[in-house]
Every structure is written in structure tokens, then in C-alpha cells.
Length: 428
Image (cartoon, rainbow, N blue to C red):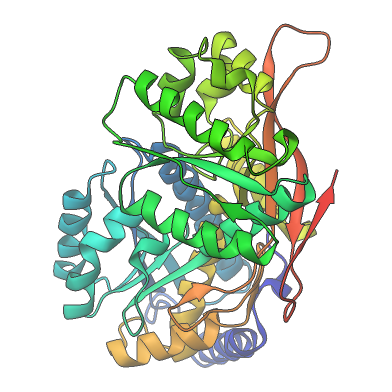
């Protein structure tokens, strides 16, 4: 059971008031409960728009597990404290399809559910943005981090750090590894464009340079020509920088497995270390397929950042419950989903209503969310409704000691204090 301190000050006072009101009402009506039975609890309905199938299935399943654990914790808290509320989650599944995400939002509107946790990905979010703004739906995404879809004054909020912060964390690691220049090998789409632009700006703050690189279509299956071009770009970089200060920075999704599996004999893999992004962290095929994993280890393990865990005691208990549901260790996005439901419920408790006006709902959400101290740490929102500050963990593939297998291992963390212009790398 979650400790009572989990509720922030304002909702805690409200919850206490609700408890006293419930007890007082019970005293007045206790003459004959058979004549005056207690009213049923008021139901707070929250939507969940998740991709539990398709390309984003792992993230969606983790977020669902985080929501399920939070739902149990909240309802248990209400029951233990005799507070006449319950929370119920209404699910819509997108299968990682942006059109199904839109259908889900339409279903939520028809069902008069206006506060929704999700969607899972940035492209889903971008496809529903106009609809949720037009029809007064409030989206709280725990896992969409793309900076290709930033926009002020809308109804979308994200409580995981966006890709600007991810690129700063990566820049700090590269600088700490004495890398002065990176050659990008990146998808030629809006996701790749936005990350490369951000990386260029962030790496400059840490004294580095982003060189001309290689762009590929996400649908490509033959990377041999792209790798030959990458070798040419690397050779040009050698004219400007010492070999040990050059690295390849890869921006790829699931196609990265095919890249490594079918092109391992390319000479470029013998020359330079590669670094990855959050899209690759703990990607199963990179460690479970021995042929791929051996190559990944040869190029440095593919160090990659992801929204980091906290050292808070409150983090570990729900993390363990989520892991029991998933049968694997969750990323911090699952815990962000856990926080998202607590914020959603306290948004309604703050108003003492389960069906407030949208204007009041949005105002209450911002009062609760901006400054909320959750299991993922303190949440502060910026001008576009994204989380301002967060740490990042770095993972890479390494051989399992005394074994023929490979595994993802966390080896470093990025931290940046509020107000500092740059952050620091802490090695484990």
C-alpha cells in the first residue's frame, strides 16, 4: 500500500476533508443502514491510449503495467481511508497506428472521458493533436519524447523528458569520452531531422562538432551502399580530427538489427565506435542474437541514453510490481505512467468533482502536475508542457562474465542541476 505521504499537500488536505465528511455523514445516517444504505463511491474515469502491439509495443505494455499498479494503489488507498471515490481506467489500443490513436480519442470523447494518459509515441500524438485541441481532451503522455511535435498552448503534456534533454545527455557522455566529432548515420525522416538538429546545438555546448553524415530511408533493407558512404565520411573526418576523437552517432529504430546482422563484415565497423539513442536501449535483438551482439561489443557496446531511474525508495516498490506484470525490468516510462495516473486522480480530487468543466479540469491539472513530487522525482513543466528536468541512464551491450551470452548493462548517469548550463556524467 502506498504511504499517505504520496498525496501532495493540497490533495492531502482535500482527502482528509472528504474522509471527515464521510464519517460525519455516516454518524447521521447510522440509525438504519438497511433503510439508508451508503451511496456508491464516485467514479473517476481516466482514459488510457496505448500501443500494446506493433512497433511501440514494449513501451505501451510498460505504460499499461504502470497504470495498473497505480490504479490498484489508489483504489486501495481510498478503501483504507474510507474515501468515497474509486478510479476506473478505460483503455483504447492503437497497435502503434496513428489512425487508431485518432479513433481512440473519438471514442473517449463519445464516452465523455476527457483526461487521457497517452499516446505512446510521437507520431500518434501528432496525429491526434488537432482533434484533442478542437474537442477539449487533455492528453498526458508518459512516453512520447520526440521534439518534432513541440507546440505551445495546446492540450498535450508530457511528463518524461523530451529529446532535447536526451541529446544533451548524449553530448555530455561524448565529451566525457573525449569525442570531438561525430559522423551521423541517421534515418531520413522528421524524427531523424529533429534529433540531428538538437544534437548539433547540444554538442556544440560541450565543445563538439556534428559532421556531414549518412541519411537512410527507414524502409531500407540493404545498407551496404550507405555504409560505404559512411566510410568515406569517416575518412574525411580523419583529416580534421585524431582517430580516437571520432565516433559514429546512429539514429535508427528496429531496423538497426538488420543493419548489424547483414553488414558485419563492412570495414567501417573495424575503425570506429558507435553511439546510439533511447530508441535502442535494451533492444532485445542487440543482445540476444550472438552475431549482432558480438559486433555491437566490437564497436563499443552502443552506449545509449534513456530517461533514468531515481534513487527514491518510493520508486522501487511500484517498479517491482510492474516487473511482476511484465516479466522484465521496466524503463522509467512505466513509472512515469504510474505518476501520470496519480496526477490525473488528484486533478479531480482537487476540484471535488468527477465531471468538471474542461477549463477547470485543465487548470486543476496544471496546479497538480507542475511541481508534483512523484516516484520519478520532481516534475516541473516548461512552456510547451514538457518535463523540464530529469536524469538519464546510459546502457551498453557487454558480454556476460564467464558465459557465451550478452546483456545490456547500465554504466553511467547524466545529471544536471537546475540553473546549470551543462550537466555531468557519473560513472558506475
